[in-house]
Length: 323
Image (cartoon, rainbow, N blue to C red):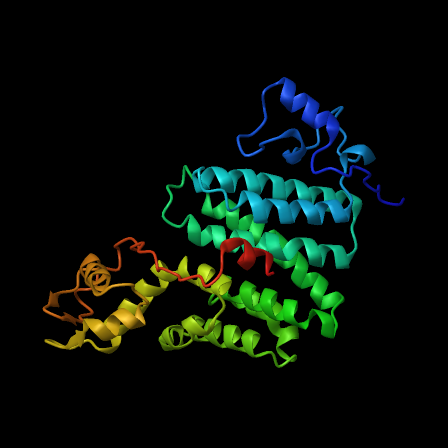
């Protein structure tokens, strides 16, 4: 049986526009009827999702992704968590339409990368939000669903024209899951391409897995901004492990380590953040040095969430859409 093909040429089907308008369910980010975007919905009795007139064909899906990430993402007078919730829902609807129609690998490779970058950026942008405002686990679930799909496609259907995309997506998957053996296994088929970004990501993940954290500081600034976003959200765990490892390795009475050097190793923005981190884990700070003591380190303390600032050279839409 052939998959159904969509014939809806607007971002939102007319019947949904009529229904949501009548019930006052138009979102504040949907400024006009022609700017409304189809909501994500689950299949239910009497509610088929595979009707051609409510499915958008691939060109419309690509146009909708571009609209969401170029115009809605840059809205400045609405809190970002509201923008995120709106875009996340509409992107899920786009993936749903594409899945129902069984779009080609080529279409998926056009649709998914901006979605993946959006979730990577959101993980960083919403890093300090309360869990009731932003769900980081659900965000990363959507990220992984999309990136695993595109990596699978690249494994089956890649050529020289997809080398750049392959480099970005595979390395991004690796650095989002630093030290994860299963992800490294999935990346093995791509290492033979001798891609420097993939190799750098693999080497960093291997070092993290083996407790060698020095390469994190050495390579962090060489990764693209999207990669830095997903590395940053792992820093609380990495910083705790780095400090614990140093307390084990440098353990000696009255052995003090310069805060200035430690701050660079922990990728902090300011020295006072490094001091706060050390004191959080029970370490003694004297002037501009910290005493690295195995007995003093409080392994039971929760990870300290201090956001690493990233200086983006381009606006977020350009970065997410890769234009």
